[in-house]
Length: 423
Ligand code: ZN
Image (cartoon, rainbow, N blue to C red; front, side, top):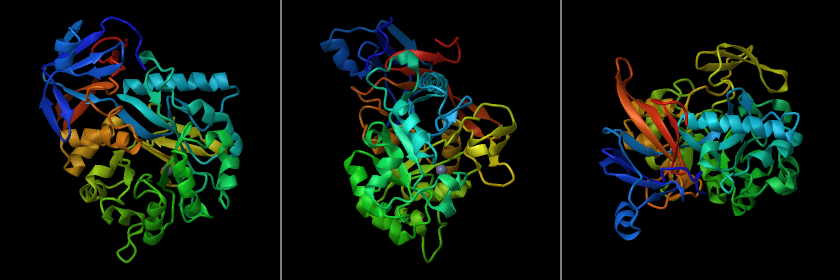
């Protein structure tokens, strides 16, 4: 979808480094705000007779595709899992999140709903459908569809998901009843996290896949054998690898063991690189085992960006926020994260041994591939959506090199610039 037809139409970035595969390449980039797409530079100039309306010298900075977060529960005080009094009020909260998220460099994402009652799914899911058809640049981040995390998960691996709302699906009707018949299509649900060993879920994976929904193994007590069986049924993803699942054991490697499968069978896997959910070495081991499947997620929730304190959570429980650490009151259970995706990229780059471009791929090209959006999102190839982040870099005495989101572009239009007021 095109961005708002504002001047300049054609922008050329020069003196910049583009993310190309696993490298950064010195090359110009042309984008078109009328079509919202990336242009083929030679073609634009010689064949279409287009010349740039604006040439931006980036002083050697990095141009990366806009970041994609496939697991985000909310932000700025708004929680996707909590219906408002009216749909209008909920949609208003969603618009605020979309604008706020875009300023962090996340230009598209899967709004994630934690285990909830059928009533909640029926209320919120229609609002979380992909917005591509109506989305304009200044709307900010764009939903690529909802991620329903639960409620068909293991009661022993529920993390902070409320035990009372967990379900077990025997027939496919059970899924339709919980999520809503009209919601259980690729639109609005794009991804479901469920435990394959709970109830008859294993048997329902092919039907979900047929409907265009990505099945992700998570919050699960699956053995290695059960996890392998789930991939044979069509599972393509692991939700926050290591967290809320049977731990790796040398005689039964559990879900983590899937990373040792053949190339064809290895699923994608989410990693929360916030420095709290996982030890850096666990991240490095997973990445070395299967670099092409690594998808960084924030799993961030609505307290992201709010001050420390005790906050109401769903179902009458409360969460203690202390810095980046969020725990369920009265326990040490981790309650989501408050990290931004670029912070996760910086941590990941430092811990995994990945190059800068490889770390960026884990929030761009790789999630795009998972979502079936190769060449549309997470790409700087011509024809891709011109969702971009301009990344600066500085040296920190402790953390070393740190990437910063300096500018954000959506559909070829600049929507955020840290050096200027928000556009
Ligand atoms: Zn979770």
